[in-house]
Image (tube, rainbow over all chains, first blue to last red; front, side, top):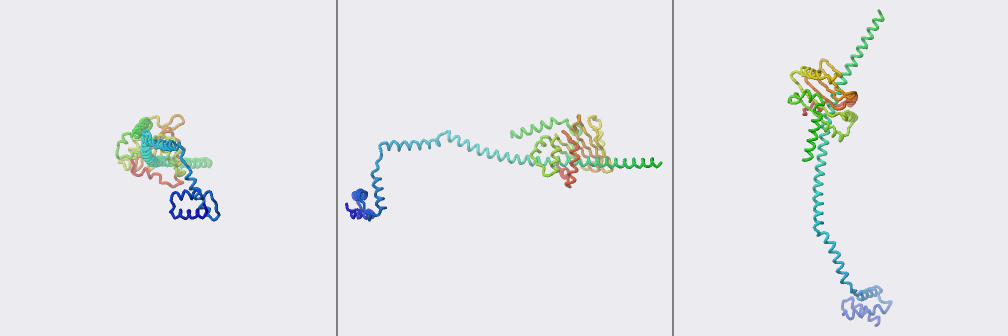
Length: 162
Length: 175
């Protein structure tokens, strides 16, 4: 087949006017003859097409195909299992209850801290009151002692003078 | 709910176990029932919660230190009683009969009478009892547990430096 004919067939092909026979012709000859005026990309395209059409299904194709499907449905079955659904719902319930419990725990903890703070303030005031009164007592003692000391000194001086 | 019950039982247990530890429960329970008295009780259960508190300043840290060995505080306070002097004399008279209490210090001036008594075992002071009879108020306060007098005396100095209004909380009408 001349390259001119091939070119014509190709043009016809792109216009989608070829018959299946002509397409087969074109694929057959474009790979065997070579012409530099032909667009290399066009040649590559038809080469690939002819390779596709030469591929054939092997005998075990069906088996492999169905085996694949089986495998996939097995994966899906896990989700459909009762125990899986049960586990999921248990987890969900645990999550909800846990979250709720945590909230309660947090608010209880805050309340406890608040309570402790208030009690602490009371205890603090009580201690301060005791402390203050105690120091007031000590102050009197100190005053008393210094007065005693003063008097003692006076008496001593008087004795000395006599 | 279960938790609450456990806490309630724990508190009741701790209260009952220390029931005889202080003079107020021992001798002044009649005042506890008196509604004209302000009663303040801080239990050991509450002290255990103080571990969650961090002292905000020097004074509070000193207070936490002083509180750390205490088992409880009880305060009875009456504002404007008809005769604070007789209440004071009565209370002091009652305590004097108990030989386990020793007088630590007493101050009697024109404004108020204050008496400090301690109950000790060996070198450890188990209770510090303060009775105050002023012109307008009568207070009995008991600190029990393990008392460090020096630590408590130190508090008012720290407080004075800070210029705090320490009586604020007790002055307000809290139960």
